[in-house]
Image 1 (cartoon, rainbow, N blue to C red):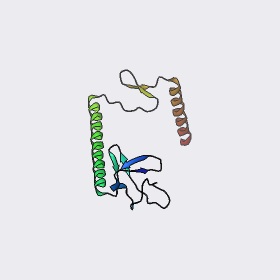
Image 2 (tube, rainbow, N blue to C red; image 1 turned 30 degrees about the horizontal axis):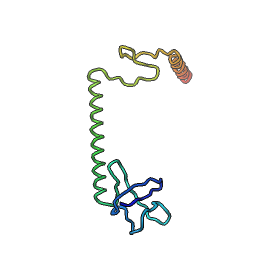
Image 3 (spheres, rainbow, N blue to C red; image 1 turned 60 degrees about the vertical axis):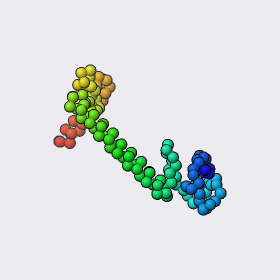
Image 4 (cartoon, helix red, strand yellow; image 1 turned 90 degrees about the vertical axis):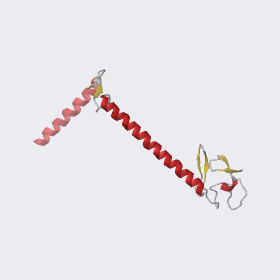
Length: 134
C-alpha cells in the first residue's frame, strides 16, 4: 500500500497496482503542474479507477442496481397513491386560499387576510376584464 495525497489534503491508501504512475515515488500530489491527472471514484465500499476494466464493470453494475432500486421505489410510491385514491383518502394540494377542514373537505381559508387578498385580486381582475370589453 502506498499513500496518495489529494488536492483537498485527504489521505487515502490504495493498492500500488492501481496507483503507480510510471514508477514515480509516492506520495504524489495529484493535479500538480506537469503531472498526469488521475480520476478516482470513492464510495463507502472502496476506491475505483475507471481506467481498469474490473472497476468499470463493478461501477456499471452498481449503477444498474441503483437504477433498478429507484424504479422499484417509484412504482411502490405510485401504488400507494393509487390505493389512497381508491379508498378516498387522497388529499391533493389545494389552491391558495383553500384548506381542508376536520371532515377532509376543502373550504375557504379561515385566515381573514388571505380571504381579503383573494377577494381584492378577483375584484381587480373582473374590473379589468369589464374595462377591456368596453
